Length: 79
Image (cartoon, rainbow, N blue to C red; front, side):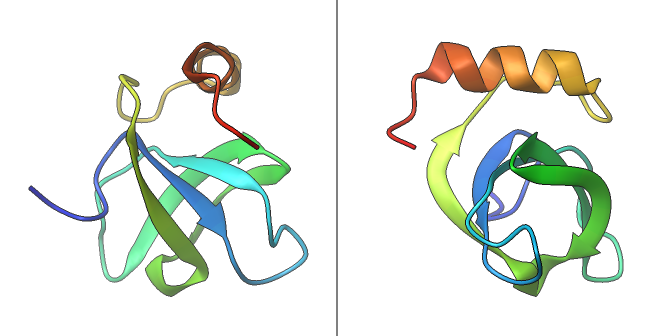
């Protein structure tokens, strides 16, 4: 089991989106992942810019922004 995998919920810790909740949408490649979420713009970022949580959502690789937001709302996370 990888620490950073597709569907993993993370908190963005760097940049202007810091503190936002995001979901990993692509497998790590060259130390980078695609993320999208609440308070986080959809973009490719460095793995070191996120802090993984224990929550994993059922989202497909490269899922749409709408489906990511729906899954985050269903998860009823404490943020």
